[in-house]
Length: 303
Image 1: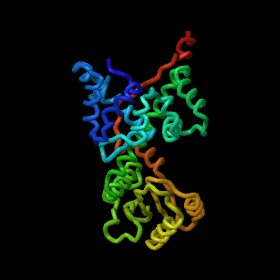
Image 2: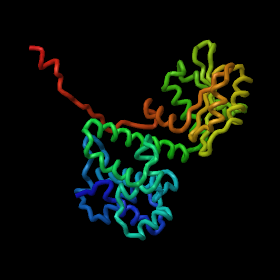
Image 3: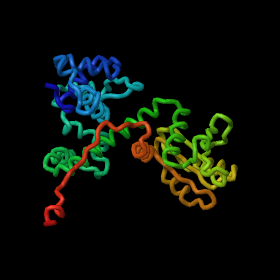
Image 4: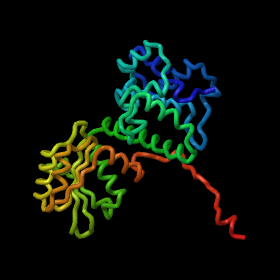
């Protein structure tokens, strides 16, 4: 029997406890050995998917431990235990979802739109899920899955080069319909762009263009960066600017951009960037889809 994702926290920490950096596939193999899973269990596949059940469930186990700060990503697809993870393992306590709610970063992940609450209130939130209606549970499950995907999108962006990020932004804008064809997207960062990473021509004659700046940053983007970008766009005779970052914008930067009249500046932070990538299917794939049915009262009252 393969344990649920929230029943394998201790096993994951255990296989990482010596400080070794493991690929995800190696972690799965080691945990399967610790659990003494049969070959049949290891080969069991998820419905309508080519991913094994143990591989899929441990993905959630790893994500939850990472969000609590007990496991960290060394580089793409490679993980290790943190000092806090070692401390928790040494305490030999029962590691559950309720236990992980003691970590603010985990609370923010599973309840991103809920104001700060006490640990007891957060525990009740976790435990109350089973009492909710099926449609509400599905909605919350989708929200939680999207939160995980968004987190992994940003994590993977940071593991790639700045040039990859610039290309990603231009690919996204093309998917969103801001270019009439592939040739209308011009990448400029490698030719002395003066603060502009790309230009998107919105029509064939070039009457309108969008100037793009992409910053793969972890620190907030402040007003000075927006001012420099505004100057670069104005210097090109542009009227539309799009500034995208993986982090967030300071309140001063947001306020400054909102007051510009000659050049319209749109700001997109990491959260919204990941949302847009999911919405337009860039860097993500659909593994399953579900239809929720209800009775058609009109049909049964038509006689």
